[in-house]
Image (tube, rainbow, N blue to C red):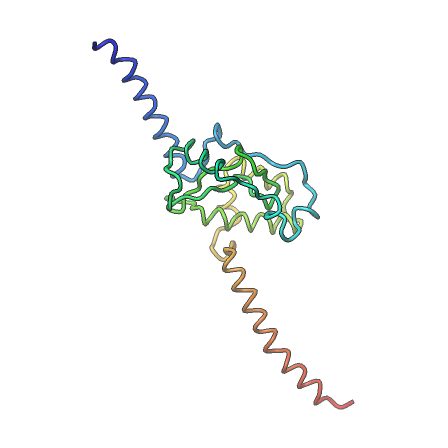
Length: 192
């Protein structure tokens, strides 16, 4: 009887080690390259990728794809601390495929899911303004996005979140609207 239990015990131990390694990788917010090697689309045309709404137009991640990613990483789906994200962001030509999605952790020790989102916006901005080659940007995400974050986002102000950017735009618009009546009034008072 003891001999029959040995293969089962070995199987359980192997399964436990795989689960722990995969979960640990997710908690570090670094994907397992065997599960998520990253994938890019064929185009590197900035006139396409940098167009407003591009990411939404190519985002077709299904619920089945998300469930599989959570399952592959040993995370109960859905999980409040994680979100399914594209390793190579769609906004810089990442593919919307199983090879390019993984659960990112909002509560990671370092480099949270929110940090990755910030860096995605920064990389998109750099690429679309000609300050970073698109292939170089994609490579940063496929190798270790956290190193890119550390390089390009040394402070929070260097990489604002989408919401912070929207607030800055609103504030600028409000100032512009305040200045418009003053400029119009001054123009009326100028001698002709």
